[in-house]
Length: 251
Image (cartoon, rainbow, N blue to C red; front, side):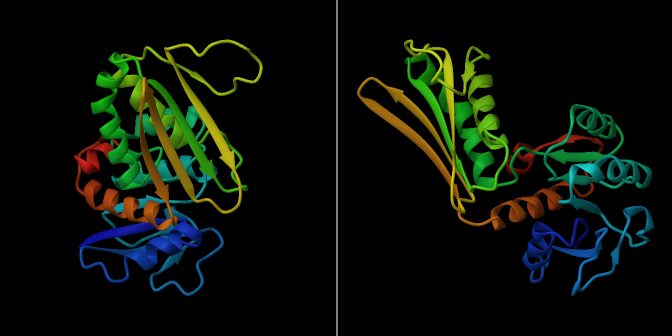
C-alpha cells in the first residue's frame, strides 16, 4: 500500500483524489495538508506540512504556486518524493524544483492525463514522417471561459513534443491577424478557444496535400487529472532522486 500525503486536500482536485482512492487497494491517503482545512476528511489534516507527523511514502500536490517553495523544502528535509501538479510556477521556482530533484524524486508534468501523455509519445513517433512529407501542423485547444492563460500549457507541451521530434525546426505562431502573408512551412499554428464549461479539448492537425490527420484528446471531467496523479504517485514512491514526468509513468 502506497501511503499518500495529499497537499491541498481541501481543494477540488484534492477532494476528487480522496474519492478516487476510497476503493483503491494499492494506495491511500494517510494525511492531508490544507491551510483552510478539509471538512469531512477521513484522514488527519494539518494546516502546514511541517506540522504533519504522519509517515507517508509520497506527496501529491494540488495546492498553489505560493506554497511550492515551502513544500519542496520540507520534502527535501524528510526525503519525501513529490508529485507536483500545481501550475504557474515561476522560473525561480522551477529552478528550485530542479535543485530538489538532486536530493529527492520529483515528478512534474504539464498535464497529468495519461491520455495526453500517450498522445505526446505518439506525436514524437509520427512527426518525423509527416514533417518530412511536408504536412502543415496546427494545434487547436479549447477550454472553459474562466481559464486565464492562452494558449494552454498542454497545447504548448504538445507543440514541444512535435518540435523536438523535428529537431526544433519549427517556430510557434499564435496570431495571424496582424500579417497578410502565406503560411511558412516551418511553423506550428496554435489557436485557443474559450467558452462555456469545456474541461479541455486539444486537436493536433497534420494537413497535407489531399489528406488530413487529426489527433484529438477530450477531457470530459477533471477526474482524468486526478487519476493520472494517483498513477504518478504509485510510480514515484520509492524511486531514487531525480526529475521525472508522466512519460516515465507510461513507459
